[in-house]
Length: 369
Image 1 (tube, rainbow, N blue to C red):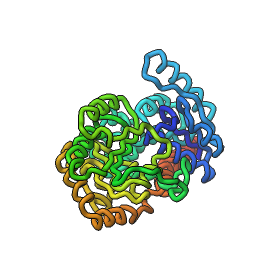
Image 2 (cartoon, rainbow, N blue to C red; image 1 turned 30 degrees about the vertical axis):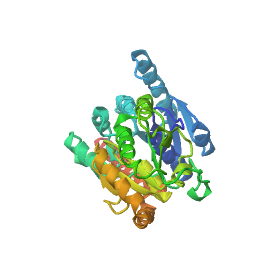
Image 3 (cartoon, rainbow, N blue to C red; image 1 turned 60 degrees about the vertical axis):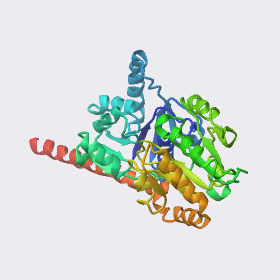
Image 4 (cartoon, rainbow, N blue to C red; image 1 turned 180 degrees about the vertical axis):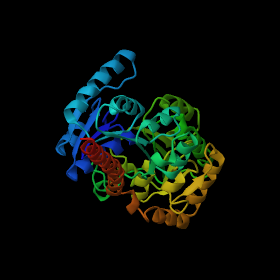
């Protein structure tokens, strides 16, 4: 197949959508397919090139003049590359691909990574809509996307071509017990709740430290919040880290306190690193934690319950060890090879269907003649 992936950029900034798109492109090229990526560019261009993947420059910034330029540029790309499948990972890409779909012989696939965004319903313009969890699929059905279009391909990044094997990373010398989150610094990631929970347990556990790994627009607000607490010297803002595995391997408890989360890719990496996990019982997170078998779930936006869960783990070393062990069980399903295989199967449905239609059209022409 000739497969074109469209994403906003291919920067190495911890964007889960970009990471999934890059992983798929690399593995599909490795499988012998002709693969290209269209985006505004970024650090992963070198990785894509090493897999023989052509990168097309496509700036999809949503300014009127730029959208016109992007439309013209996209038309040039598909005329030259002639894709069988266009896989759009973000809304603007779906719209661009949808505009030309009727005049070009390709099928359109979209992946809903962030169903909590209002614009996610636009992903339903595609011939097939991949949901990254059953929770996302259910949400899309409620929002009017036909069930027959939806396919669930659970996310996974383990074994990614973007990084080394977990055993090849050197853990950082963190203070222990170490509580860590790796997340964008956005309010929806529950950073405020996590800071509040840490402040609740800090007096009882004077050696505990909190590590906030990630960057984002709300970081100054969180930093101000921390400065006004008596435990600011034990709460560390680490910024974006290209190798968050080094933090996870040195972490005792990993927390993802999100208010909404389609899947929680970072949880799969925390599980692989052997962290005990506490996360919000929301959207796709329970699926990522094997429905409470691999981590402790707490209500979102509830710092008191989160603090209680952290305190129980820090009080009971046996329980803490048990949850670290359970996190590392049943990880095979989060391998990128499985994600790629199931995604190719979705493509195959469309390519087979299109080929059948072409055969039928040829037969009709022969009959008329």
